Image (cartoon, rainbow, N blue to C red; front, side, top):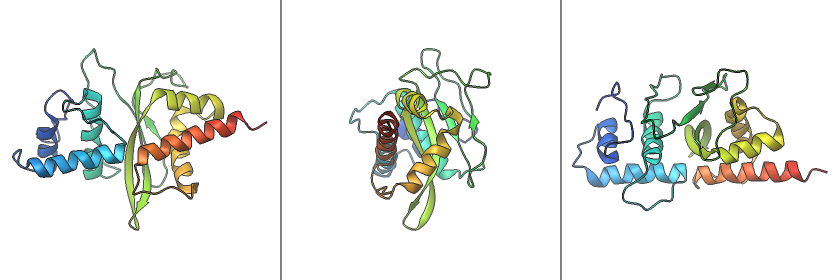
Length: 195
């Protein structure tokens, strides 16, 4: 599979990761490590042998984004009609205008369904290097944050970047997605109990 043939999540994840990373499909141990690395970084805790399509897509895109640093174009593939597309929110270093791939066309994107998956890109410092991270968040986290803080959905990557940069307890070696979820819940709690 070359980069012009984007993975659609319906085939075997191991084969797609092997093709993306230039490995032999027989390199099962190395492929398993790569899948585990992405699952750890995305906060995916599922031990299922057969992963859902959206989870396979999140893992594949995490490796694609890692191998293709910000600034390179990414082709977003369409999915089966029975599966809702994953919304992608991305930013480039330094903080630049954010591109939302899926929206209604109005000034303000429609409210997310609670179980829509949104991928958010931002940067963390790990071992002295600034690395781009992509996490997947359920719509209910974003809806809650928008409801209590009033930020716009397209400002989410900027909000996450500022929250991660300013939270002294943040550790790039711990599961990143869980820490961002914690920051969102903290912000919602603080906003609700301000008065």
